[in-house]
Image (cartoon, rainbow, N blue to C red; front, side):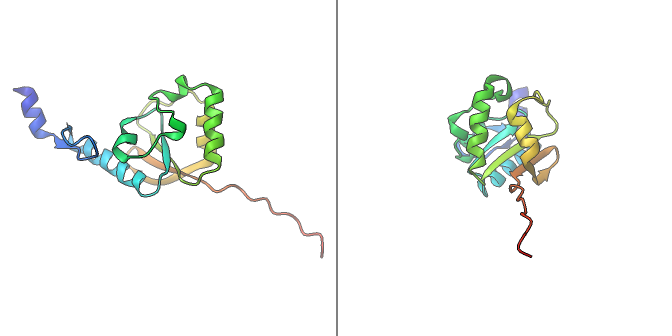
Length: 146
């Protein structure tokens, strides 16, 4: 009876493949917001800290380089993280879903360092921030023909 009542009070997620899933209203609103923002312009994304792999399915967006792991800061080697960074450098459509309310992964992770240095908040809702890649810093050459 308790589960039936809780289910009745929850809201359907209404994302691809999750139409029967019911969650508390605030969680549904959060996941729907994230999915809509990712679908507006992300070619790929990662969650920081390690994230909700279901988002790839719900948004119909492939994980970067096929590396879909929940706890990537601990499971991906530094070499794999460097490969992702190289892949991201050639793209403008990479997003990071950053949840300030979750534990932060190890600060020495190459991807964490990269995210902190090269990405900035482009949208925010509660503890969730959507980060986009900042353009590379252009060096200005001093003119010597004057």
